[in-house]
Amino acid sequence: MARPWRIKVKRKDGTECNHLSTENCSICEAERSRPIAMPATWSFLVSTYENMFHPWEKPYEITSREQLRQECIARGVINKGLKESTIFKDREDRWI
Image: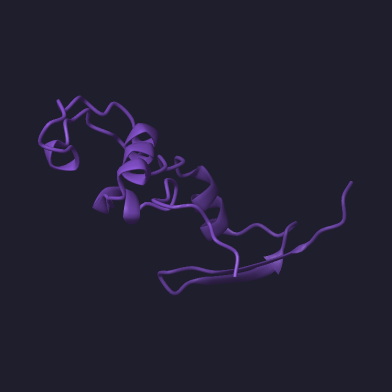
């Protein structure tokens, strides 16, 4: 059997736990029985960004965030949705 370890938890609601793993705790047990929350999801709506294209070009639909990112880099424009996203950056990382 594994050695017991100390559980120290400070929760947002102000409650705290500081006990060994072998001791029963009703608060910790209630947390373990809660269902796992769904992670945040990012959805992308297929759209045509007319203002990104030159007047002589025929606009076409952008179908993914990666395609939008590549178009923004190629055309030298910035999309607000990509700029505020942590997953899809609007430009390459630059080492200083």
